[in-house]
Length: 252
Image (cartoon, rainbow, N blue to C red; front, side, top):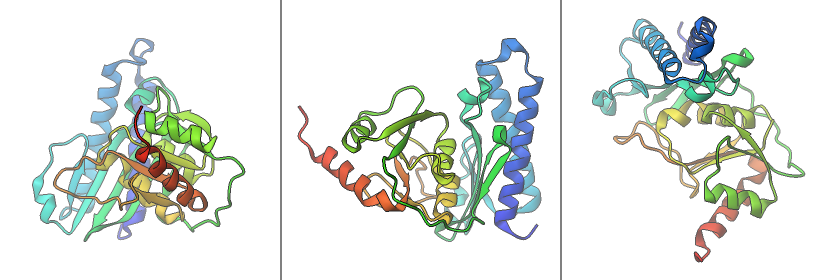
């Protein structure tokens, strides 16, 4: 398979099917347990590592579930993967989890796929950019548990409708699929949490950046990448300006 985007899609889909098999084999007592999370992480990691070694043996890999091989810092091509994004949702048998497969090449993300296995859907960088329309009221994807203070303040300032959902990839894909208008995260993430969703979002014509407006940069020495914006481009300036307003406001 010579096309990197097609490979990313095939691998994300296959890993997703493997994860569904893990769920189907689970006992009722396994639901919601760390053991089921671990089985999912391990099964998907082993599959993706093997497939990438077979298909792209000369490329480096950065994965949440593997020891960081620092030779990637000198590599021209690095696959950035999250074998199971949303272990909690996966273990609870929910639909809002994902598989991320992205390729970083010579300084930028060049191909990616995000599988949503519970929805039988795979989103890839082979998308055609959409003509995005200005929403009447902004719908903001937020954490199922608790949004960070900045995101809570942003929702209040924008009078946005908040839509709770699970994993980072699922939230970004909700923007790509047009189910929400923005996903703003400030609670801490790593490169594998956002690389594939950001690449696919860009291919769809969405705006992506750090919350301060700076670019999202990948394959760095420290893969910690704690914040991001993925949003409808027609509201990007409004979101960025509102974030600046909130962060510049004196604390009480």
